[in-house]
Image 1 (cartoon, rainbow over the protein chains, first blue to last red):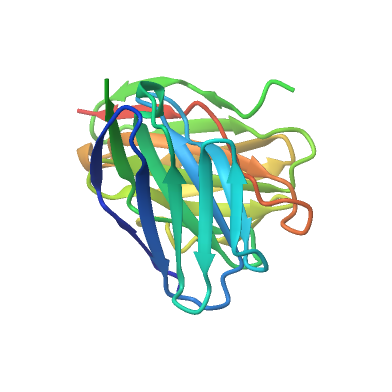
Image 2 (cartoon, chains in turn yellow, cyan):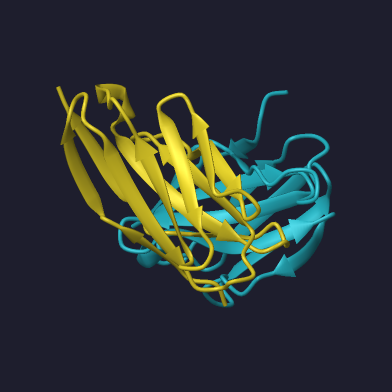
Length: 111
Length: 115
């Protein structure tokens, strides 16, 4: 079955710097790759997603890139702010609705 | 819409007791998912339903866990008997059919503590 590996497990950056989180997936048939943000004590919430027919997608300060050949995708956050501090999860999905999540990255943005 | 609703929000029970977690998905969503989140194992999919039918229960830890969806607006996850290692946050999520959009909307979660 599908397996998703996420790195790093923790990431600390200075406010204003960029943050990059990387994920790899095992099943080349996966075609949907969302990213969820989970603040402490809250539920995971979708922040951006990308489909396999697109190489890059951007929404204000966040962007996601996908390399289908290498089977990896990344989340980029520019001009980080303290409110970006949270746990970020990547996921991959076949055309079944089932998401396989990575282990999560705890991002700390230091003021 | 109120979003995905879960109850109770917190549950503390003793080992050996039965625990029932409840979920009301967003109206019109065809898919319902149950997840378990722990520090050690992260976010694990336990089971998911499509149109009230269980599709994949390969993530259910063992026979002590069972899930039902008697209708489109209600699902339960039951643990009987409960054990301390079942302590976790249990999330329910729902989504539309994948052909229309994959986003899964999570409920607020139920924090279960088994002593």
